[in-house]
Length: 340
Image (cartoon, rainbow, N blue to C red):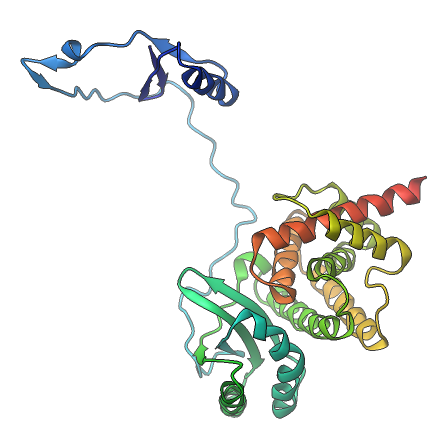
């Protein structure tokens, strides 16, 4: 027999249990299975040679509806900006290092760079891709020629000290290209950048002040706080509780997160410094929310949670899934306790 699927065929022997399973799997994806009698080798030949007959066909179905582009982003950043471009508001530095050194750089060394620059307005993310090894992406303000020159000097001297201490191997200065497709353009992008700055500040304090918590637990608690800050306390918890999470949770992380969330504030046992920067992040999230449409807020929130995990932990999907799962279960527990 042959299993037909559009223009594809698969020879099957119905006596074989594995082949029967293939039919069952096909029926789980399709409403029906079309089986035809198999042909032998002689039927496939023509004067001793295999041939293929091509017949153009046209569908009788109605055309698919045009996608809704109402909320599609307008691409305004087609050209990748270059370092020291006068139009650049931020200078992006890629500091290549081992993942185990990143916490030390973020908590102990990054504040020194910001002191040299005379600002707290900077943000970072841990990054890794098939084309680039592990590195920190750091963005510092440089909206004037003098600011760009100062940023380049400070970054160069700072990375030189990291390299001398064995904490970094390479510095690459790159153009900053805002992710307008995720976060919006104009005032919306500026408000989103304020969130990135505030979130980076919270990450630095949390890593320093709450070292006893598992990293995924720390991420989960912050994810809850971000959702509450962006959507409001009740709506944020409800969204986290009802939004499915792809991937697998970890029982120890989920239990620790629930224990923290039901006995204290979302960032329980926080220091006064962490409380202060967390409040700043909530204010930045509330301001950013005013620049987003209701229909896009869930997508934006997913991006904010994803990038928070990258800042706090690593670009690891399994770790992120464990944190999201723990945050979801903790919010479900909060909602159930409120209604009981």
